[in-house]
Length: 70
Image 1 (tube, rainbow, N blue to C red):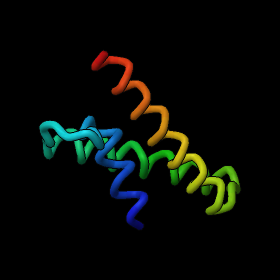
Image 2 (image 1 turned 30 degrees about the vertical axis):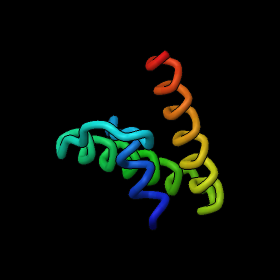
Image 3 (image 1 turned 60 degrees about the horizontal axis):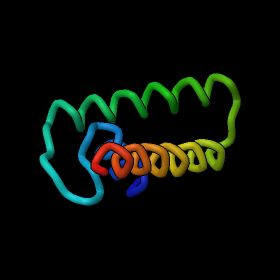
């Protein structure tokens, strides 16, 4: 559950290195991840696959943030 919250914030543009947090961004991130999770359940993916996807999303978005801030 904690990984879901972290991923929703990161996808909603609240970066791990600090910055501004918006309610709309966090809600959009939560909605996006909820949609992905629902799609994966329909496709029959196990919960471990969803957790792996969340980790990949967090890493990719964080790397994108680092690249943009340079």
